[in-house]
Image 1: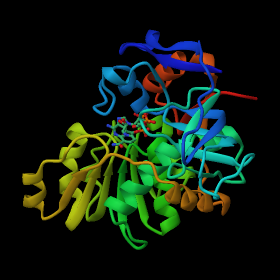
Image 2: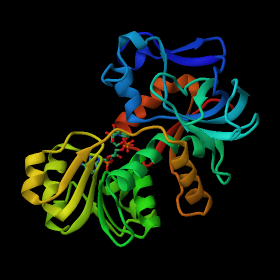
Image 3: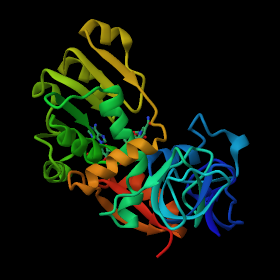
Length: 310
Ligand SMILES: NC(=O)c1ccc[n+]([C@@H]2O[C@H](COP(=O)([O-])OP(=O)(O)OC[C@H]3O[C@@H](n4cnc5c(N)ncnc54)[C@H](OP(=O)(O)O)[C@@H]3O)[C@@H](O)[C@H]2O)c1
């Protein structure tokens, strides 16, 4: 099979398209024929050696944490939930990769993908969708009648977060750059703030949750817009606990984890028409390096996806 692997950490040039044997599923695992694999900023962090769970002893490594594909074979004692021929989507653990014609997935990572999506759109969902889901609901404890401020609403995670929060019934405020204001409004943001023109803390007050996909100064300035008892949840840096105490709020950073049951809930929302992934650009597998550079530099709306098979 063709697979995009790295043998050393470095820039996009370390990505190599190679011919590898098709992996064999072990006990409880599935072999999936991959149709699409999406890109996430973590892929570049892994490639650069900046992701703590992937050290040099894990190389060579096939890249990519997401896939949509078709179950090809089942390992011994694999769960009956998935059968050969099922169309699935999955977020993979960091020890394997989706930038390949075949990939091994575990039962806890994969589930049937939304019936209403093609493989490219389905492949765009898992890691970004799970990140938004866990950030808003598991860590942010978001309830229907609450107000949430989402920083970075136009990107992969942000565009799912806006739609999940709206589907829950929350009032959604988001920050983005001017080029994406119409997009974030079109997917349900009640208020959209151009972060280059306006200071969000001059406009926003008394939110129950700040969901931070930007960090730095944006995170620091966010404490002031929270209600007492509110929560700041970041995907990036550990928030300042002294500041949190001073404002009477909780603040935390988390790392997304694989979760097939949550992917089922996300699939239900998608098939109910309440959430629609946006894929801005599709690259062939062989152009994974170009695709990673595009994601890092172009600030595309929603997601960037690799087409692995027709
Ligand atoms: N902890 C975890 O488990 C986890 C999981 C997933 C992602 N992440 C991290 O979370 C971040 C978001 O991920 P993603 O996949 O959504 O990335 P992405 O698709 O690259 O989107 C990030 C968005 O943030 C916007 N942005 C940049 N500066 C901003 C600012 N000052 N204020 C508001 N928006 C700003 C950018 O668009 P514009 O500047 O054009 O508006 C961009 O679209 C990344 O840094 C990623 O590494 C962490």
